[in-house]
Image (spheres, rainbow, N blue to C red):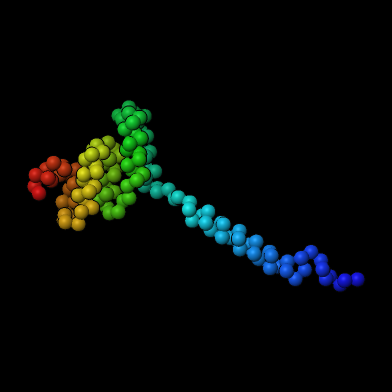
Length: 131
């Protein structure tokens, strides 16, 4: 009789199990860390774009372009968020959006001017003439 010795992996079995669990945990961490999270605000804006596309206001190429711009733009300040809403509602084109976004992110402009640019109370051309 062996009294339970030399069964399975014996003394080393628990160490092997711990090693396997650690490898599994590291792989799980790597997979979850690389998972891209969806921005709920971007999803709402893309839904607005889908409605504009379905209504025939924009064509397929413009839909794809606007969707890519919305997905790539980080809403770093509240004025960018307002500007993104205007862009999704097709109130401005891509060139004007990018110009206004660059001006808003510029630290040399006061907040009231940024707000007027974002809301459309001041057009980009008028802003350039003032400057």
